[in-house]
Image (cartoon, rainbow, N blue to C red; front, side, top):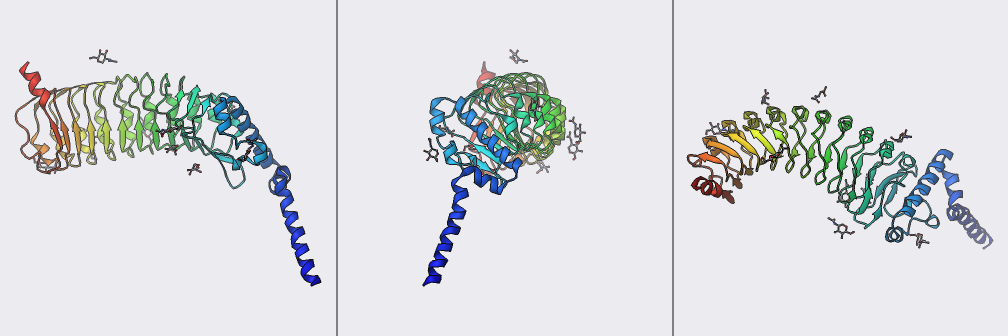
Length: 366
Ligand SMILES: *[C@@H]1O[C@H](CO)[C@@H](O)[C@H](O)[C@H]1NC(C)=O
Ligand SMILES: *[C@@H]1O[C@H](CO)[C@@H](O)[C@H](O)[C@H]1NC(C)=O
Ligand SMILES: *[C@@H]1O[C@H](CO)[C@@H](O)[C@H](O)[C@H]1NC(C)=O
Ligand SMILES: *[C@@H]1O[C@H](CO)[C@@H](O)[C@H](O)[C@H]1NC(C)=O
Ligand SMILES: *[C@@H]1O[C@H](CO)[C@@H](O)[C@H](O)[C@H]1NC(C)=O
Ligand SMILES: *[C@@H]1O[C@H](CO)[C@@H](O)[C@H](O)[C@H]1NC(C)=O
Ligand SMILES: *[C@@H]1O[C@H](CO)[C@@H](O)[C@H](O)[C@H]1NC(C)=O
Ligand SMILES: *[C@@H]1O[C@H](CO)[C@@H](O)[C@H](O)[C@H]1NC(C)=O
Ligand SMILES: *[C@@H]1O[C@H](CO)[C@@H](O)[C@H](O)[C@H]1NC(C)=O
């Protein structure tokens, strides 16, 4: 009897012993982490609270779990920590947050790997101090109202694999410093108001798989340095004001499955090297000033499912090699100057859903 009582008392006091540090936040921290880690954790908590205080009142009430009585920031909404208890992931997408990044203390988050603020109402510009996030791998600021230009300090984030700045009113040029992001795989800046030319340094991104620059105001030519991007499978440059011809170096992008160059000011012929892109499934060249006849080599693109060539100045006959397009579903060529007959086997795959030459005939009859 006595020994049982003693045992349970013992259990009770050991429970208490374990509970006390949990109840007192700072004691718990001090008992488990090094002084440097404690300092980082306190600084991270303070920095998040200071940023929260700069946001609008709706955002502040949405982030009610961000408070000191709720304990470490690791338990706060949208915040995740690494094993050492330092903030590694801030994911606050789709949260209706409104405010700027000016009060966000970038140097306070040395271990941040992911920052996702997608689909909120953040405005103001991207502070140059973003370059302080030296471990950042994933940056998603898409669908906000972020303006100003992309700071060249973005090139300091040399762990980045994924960057999405799409659907914002960003202006200015694409900084040449992106060439330093040698581990980058995804680069999305579509639907902004970016101008200037595409930097040659793009050719340094040898691991990039997807580049989307569509729906901006980019000018100049498509840089020949793209020949280095042998892992690229999606290249979207449509809806800009790019000029010059499609560089023959495009033929080096052997992984390419989707190529969109529609709605630009591209001139000259479609290069024969396009025939090297044998994985290509989607080819969008609509609404440019491309001329000459289609190269026979286009017949090597046997994986094509969608081919959009309308609203150009293409001429001559459609090469008989197009009979090889057995997977074609959409084939649109109106408003060109093609002559002769359609390749007789173009429908042989049985997949063709839409085919349009209509505007060609009405334009010819004008
Ligand atoms: C602090 O966060 C906790 C945990 O989410 C929550 O229950 C509490 O209401 C918050 N306190 C304040 C003052 O917002
Ligand atoms: C970051 O947090 C989000 C949201 O909770 C989660 O889906 C994602 O897996 C986390 N990513 C990393 C790299 O920790
Ligand atoms: C950011 O969050 C949104 C919404 O949850 C999600 O769709 C998107 O994939 C996330 N971005 C990254 C890079 O994980
Ligand atoms: C954006 O977030 C809002 C909530 O703030 C949500 O209703 C909407 O579906 C989200 N949009 C997208 C495209 O995810
Ligand atoms: C943070 O970024 C600013 C602006 O680029 C720079 O001046 C500063 O040296 C950086 N600090 C650290 C600790 O990296
Ligand atoms: C192509 O890649 C090589 C080797 O990675 C690099 O030295 C060269 O500068 C790149 N070319 C261009 C035009 O970016
Ligand atoms: C097409 O591929 C061949 C074989 O790899 C290569 O030698 C040639 O340079 C490529 N042509 C162009 C114009 O890219
Ligand atoms: C693009 O072409 C249009 C129409 O041909 C012309 O008005 C415009 O100036 C051109 N823009 C550029 C940047 O070349
Ligand atoms: C394409 O068709 C031509 C004949 O029109 C044929 O000689 C050629 O081998 C075909 N190419 C491929 C890649 O199937």
